[in-house]
Length: 297
Image (tube, rainbow, N blue to C red; front, top):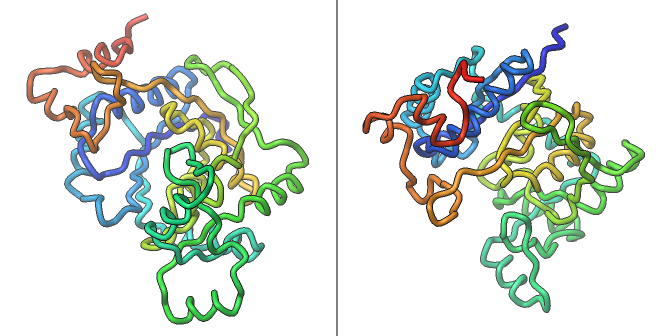
């Protein structure tokens, strides 16, 4: 069995790659090379309504142009929904998930009525537990009628179950950019509340599919932006509950625009394709994001 570290870059094909994506991909690729590891590419396309084949094709083209090489085959999440269903079923069978029929409007109304409205690390209203503990008969009736619903994590029960399994605080190890140990962080999954594990429209969520895929692909090192640091709290919780291996983490800084705003597809920040069309080279991209060109010391 190979003991080489395994890294991955996992973009979503719902828009063009920009400098922030290039930075994340290059950091992961460079760390894999530095540590003699393997580099995988995964297409995170569970959002079937927004993800498009032409964007995936452009992602592959952009990454190859940057000089990245990855192992085949490329894993596409949309081809593995049954795997995520099985993982969710394991959690639900243990009473750690519950159906939630609430709409966004209903959640917003309940949150606005709270004396001290709370938000999760992404800035979304913290779910107020509208269907936690709902009568089983009502839940079964609505499910039998085919009403759309999500499956949410019963956070209190999940944390208790994780503690029982691990016998210690939920924690994760952070690495520096050179791959050396940097710190051990105690996770705080409580700040996510009863988060969605299975969405209404697809049989999974980002949080569930990413931990399942990392385990199935043998990923040992997860490199991603600092904006996903808090998500690691929840991912470590799910890894413990599903008996999945614990990877090491490196959360790199974010590329910002002149106003200090994180680059985003939703803001249509200048794409790698556009930069290439205007004469930029892969070495230029590396300089733009503050990374040395290949071969430089």
